[in-house]
Image (tube, rainbow, N blue to C red; front, side, top):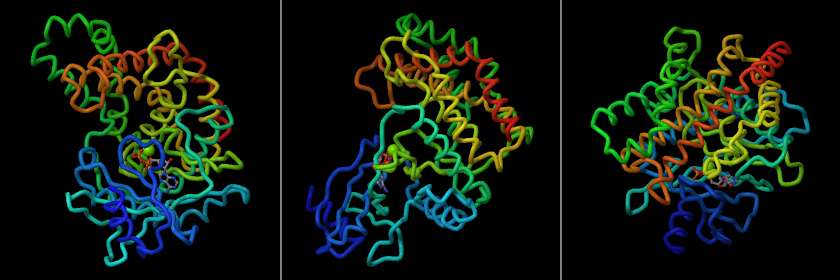
Length: 370
Ligand code: ADP
Ligand code: MG
């Protein structure tokens, strides 16, 4: 394996320049390695794109290259404070080719991205200061791409975050008939879905009515995809750009809050412990708006609560459907895990409903400072 990896790595650098090659990070989708070079400043990250998740890897790479070029041009316009380090991942070209990727003998696509040194990534938000940094990172990202025309990006994950489509897939599964055991096991979750049918279309309706507009989004803005400076602990980059595509920024904000404000985690086993944490919410929102204020419209603010409420509901619905389908999409350690994860997301949705007024006040507060 080591020599196979070295062969691939050496298509992005002179082979005698490789000092070491080791697995990197806790990513769940791609295979990621750090290739340290004898000239340390040019170390890079070597990644195999997961072909099951991304059936069009070359389109993913085109989006990534477009993003990187556009964001690099825009960064100076942002006039970030001079003490704010911000890095845009650099996509490397293969040595003997113009392309920014190579294929291995099994047909998998590999790419190389400049290593962002002196950085750390964390799997969950530890402090309120970190929560604010997460919001700042997403705000910087959205601002950098706010005028990148969507028509130039490929939709690499059609249907992603289109909640009514997930509901339709759920309904199709129900129509195919459930076993008595499934009916019994899932009764609570199925009831939750029935009680929430009406709200599932809220963002898509606003999109169709032209109230919300499609813009480039990150697609996976969870804390693990944000790099922090090892010394200052401030956010310095947002990585994992495979899901950059056209969408609603509300999807990203909802997803960021869903992962960042559930302190019990998405695999919580005690449902009582699942709460939407208002402190983290306020800090992420404050960080986000401090940067994104420049391009957020009144309508964007109007749909923030809807998004924060919808995205955990949507994920719960997807887990539930996948459980009923026999766990074909999400990886699980045991069959009931997807159902348990659905319950966690629905508990988070309920917690958001219970704190609706407080959440709305915090959003209004940000809006009034816009
Ligand atoms: P996945 O899609 O599998 O989550 P990521 O692109 O998020 O893959 O990479 C996995 C981990 O590798 C990240 O969480 C981070 O710790 C590390 N990593 C990835 N790219 C870089 C980079 N350019 N510089 C530094 N660390 C990186
Ligand atoms: Mg990742």
